[in-house]
Image 1 (tube, rainbow, N blue to C red):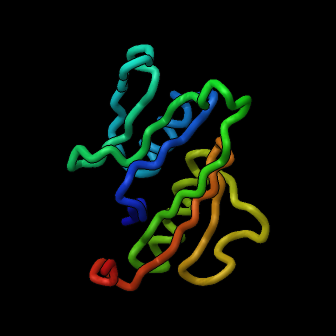
Image 2 (cartoon, rainbow, N blue to C red):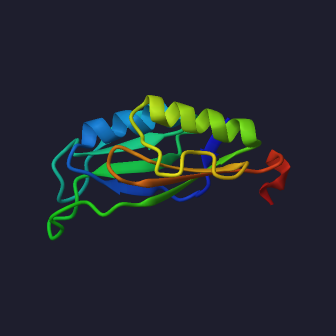
Length: 132
């Protein structure tokens, strides 16, 4: 099992909202939900929510002043080194890539890059109680 390290939602800017939302919803077992808002076309952004209905990621077009989306750093936590390996294999199967050198460059830690160029840093903790 692995989870996002941040309790606040990550915002991912992309030119292909549906593809990015599909990658992340499958990677982290999140549910997709279209969202609209003031000054936005209905359904333009996609929220990805967990089983507790908390928004974990928001996938949207880049702000109007940006010509290209800026890559984001996303932290993923697993509970042991096997979780890290499983996460890397899952992300790669869904379309992520592994930078050189190949993973894992050290036990309990790996970095992959999602299809939009966002860096995903995957780390292991010894147990859920190590959360703090």
